[in-house]
Amino acid sequence: MLYNDNFFKEMKMEGIQVSVEKTGTQKDISIIKVGGYIDTTTSSELERALDSLLKSGVFRVIIDLRNVDYISSAGWGIFISEIKGIRERGGDLKLANMIPDVYEVFELLEFHYILKAYDSVEAAIRDFNRADGARTFIEEESAELDSVQEEPENAETEIRTSEGADEDVPEGLEEKIRKIALDHPSWGHGQIARELDTDRYGFIRVGKLTIWKLLRKMHLNSQKQREAIAGRGNG
Image 1 (cartoon, rainbow, N blue to C red):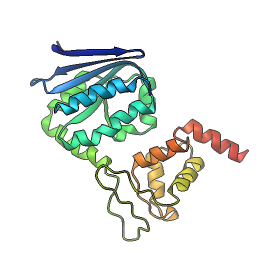
Image 2: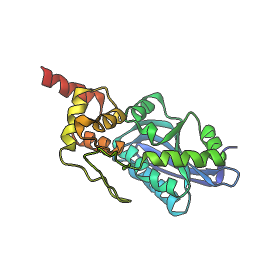
Image 3: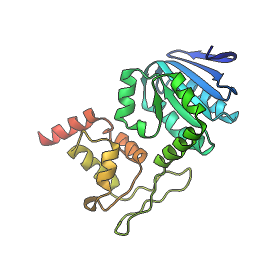
C-alpha cells in the first residue's frame, strides 16, 4: 500500500479537499493530495497543510493534483513562494498527476522551469529515492530561482537582489516588458527575458518570476490577453 493511514490527516472545506500522508522507506516523504479548485477562497487550506509540514521539518513533499480541476494564481503562488526555501534545506516540492488543462496553464506560465512535474506519484517518489540524482536536480533547479547573474562587461543595467527580497526593478522595465509582450504575444517568459538581455534593451537581466509578476500586474500574463490588446492597438 502506497500510503500509511497512521499518518493520515484530512481537512475539507467547500471547493477543496486536502489530505496529508507519509510514504517512503523512512517515511520521510509527505504527499499532499488535493481535490477540487485551488483559488483565492480555497488556497488557504492547502497553504496551511504545506506550512505545517515545513514547520515540522518535512522538506520532501509531493503535491498530488489528480483531482484538481483548476489552479488560480493564488494556488501557483503557494508553490512558487516556498520552493526556494525548501531546496535550500535539501528538500524539494514535486507536482504529480496534473490533468491536461491544469498542465497547459503550468507550461504556459513556464513554471516547468522552476517546478518538476511527474505523471504519477510513484514516479515522483522514485526520483526522491535517487539520492544523488535528486541532489543534482535540486542544485540545478534552485539556480533557476537566482534572480541575478554576473553581468557581461558591456552590461548597462545591473539588478541586485538580497535573500528574501524581490528584485530591484530598473526604471522603464515595465514598459520594455510590455512592448516585447505586445510585439510578440506568443512569447513566453523565457523568450522575453532573453530579449531584455540584448543591446536593444540595455542588456537587462531579470528573473522569469519578476517578468511573470509584472505581466500579471499589467494583465498581460496570457497569450490571449496580449493578442487582444495588441489587436486593438493595430486596429
